[in-house]
Amino acid sequence: METGQFTEFQMDALREIGNVGAGNAATALSQMVGRRVDMSVTKVMVLPADAIAKFLGGIEKNVAAVHMPVYGEMLGIALIFFPLERLPELSAMLIGQKEEDPANLSELGQSAIKELGSILTGAYLSALFRFIHIQLIHGVPGLVIDMAQAILDTVLVELEQREEVAIVIETEFLEDDKQLTGSFFLLPEAGSLKKFFEAFSKALGIPSDG
Image (cartoon, rainbow, N blue to C red; front, top):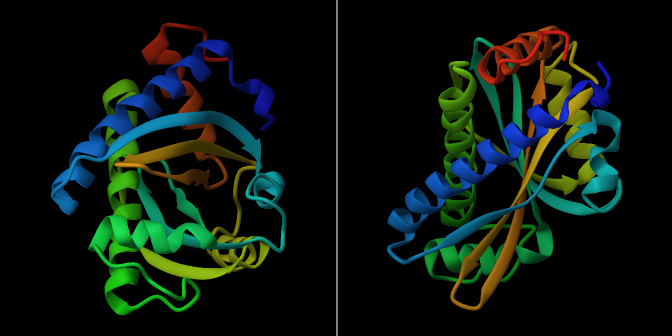
């Protein structure tokens, strides 16, 4: 499926889903760290799957990725990417201590990053359900730190057949004077995007052919 098959109505709905999800995630994250953390959505787009690494800064860009399977009425994989160089500040926000070596996080640091990925994914999947009534749940999160393309090659092996597009929600975290970003990707399994379009069409009252 081509990215152009998403209508402007559907993209507006995706942006609203992103905003609602970010609001819910901010509440959960604030409770997790015991301080106010604001979140906002900076970009919502539908990206060709083979353009993900370029979006993240290039195939050799070092990143941290939380990944988890998505089950329910639509199957796929959720991926949340964080720039590797920002992990020390992210860990300071989450666990109150700055990890000195982002490529070798402590067990506590790894756990916190995975929990953050889980919070974001759960919030966005809940927002999707609220808008288009597709019931989705995510599995246990894993964390991998590597070059962007290497991560994609490894994780996407789990999706033997996938759609050619990814739904992207880029999120900004604001806590005191810290400004951090993370990018949420939903990569549907082959055939799942059709259900997604149909659910959108039904919710928005537009023809199912887009």
